[in-house]
Length: 323
Image (cartoon, rainbow, N blue to C red; front, side):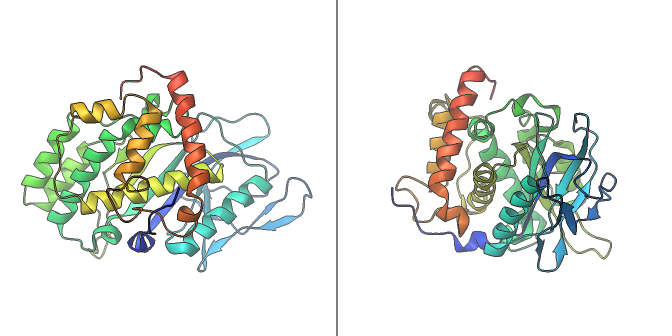
């Protein structure tokens, strides 16, 4: 299969990732408090017991922080690894080096762990105009809900049943309609806040820093914890692709799937094909593979194979998932 052209615009998107894990108490990582993570400089190689330098990105360090939702076994410590703001080919390379580092220090995951990807909205749409931001997150909510089975399916887990990553509620559509019709940014922010924190978290979509500068983000919480590089790359490519598609799409359908969408998402495996086609990764509808560049583009065959395997597992475990 010949893959479409790389998506140069996706390489400009700024994003971050959180990897929830359990690490050995002997890993040599100083874990900070919740949202008060400590910069990671070194860890301890589980095999050699020698110090192992942690990767960094353009002078910025990953951080280690505690998360009370992570269950651990004896001899383990809960640790959420939080990346610096990443972008471009170098950002993906840093992510892959860090995943290798987590394996070397003995990190692992279980069903209490998640993988969260946060995207800077302005880096996608090129403006901080509240009206454009509103349209973008409304479209993103719609298309993500249409593709929920493909998103949850690629985890291969019961992530859709997790309190912290539930599917978007039906009333989210109404909140999004109000969000785009009101002119007042304060009310837009309130609507985004009321959408809650499920598979997508819109609560920080209109966030500004102390100086008033726009720093709005959207967070994808749909993915289960993993340290599998192909799974993580597929999750990241999906997120970047959906953001690019939401920015480009002109005609938006209803919040509820139509009959054609229902048919194409009857199983997680068919929903994955629909997602890949919708993003232009396969099929002939789009000339560019939205969201894919560098390693995301080069590793697509391996990513696709792993995602398909996990969707088949999801279909076996949850054939009647209400998605």
